[in-house]
Length: 113
Length: 114
Image (cartoon, rainbow over all chains, first blue to last red; front, top):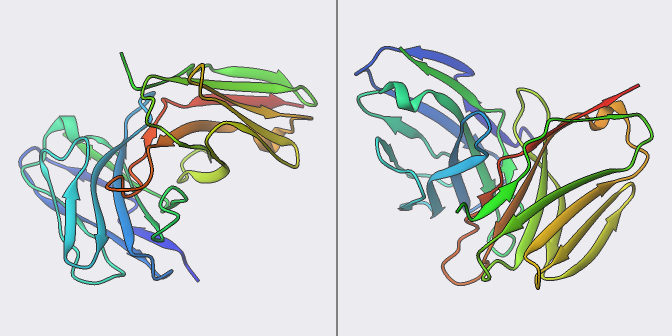
């Protein structure tokens, strides 16, 4: 049981490039989330999903897109990368009914230059 | 004003000390209160979970919630070097359309030195 896995671990992007951050969970959780963590700023919710085919915006969605075609996968797409998107990105999942108990992946460090 | 305020520290204590970590919040709708622990270059992991006001104890850890003061605390007794991490408070209104949307504090960096 791997829990929540994220790829890549680290990536450097040039301004204007695009990329997809991958997230997979094997716990059959309905709820999945994407957060970003900036130094000294805690975690901010980017997007979340309550099940396959259902996604919604969080607190800081601008510049990102998501899709959820399966229960297991919740990729995050960055279009036209900007330096402001330099951050550590965490994917998390939880079950319905205990949404506050979230299981986090190891994170993806992204540097946009 | 931020919805959740947490002193970022850093906090450095000797092994065996009692540690007190605190958060204040402004949203009276918050009902679920969590403490997550995050080791360096790792994802956060849930440490304590409390619903509404009151105390909860788990081993060396005690979580307290005072909704009337909008104040939550995490106490660590007999602190160990392995407790060195960033501690994040998180809160949620729960139910309805919250869908587990958590609001996090900034995190407090704790170092316990031998």
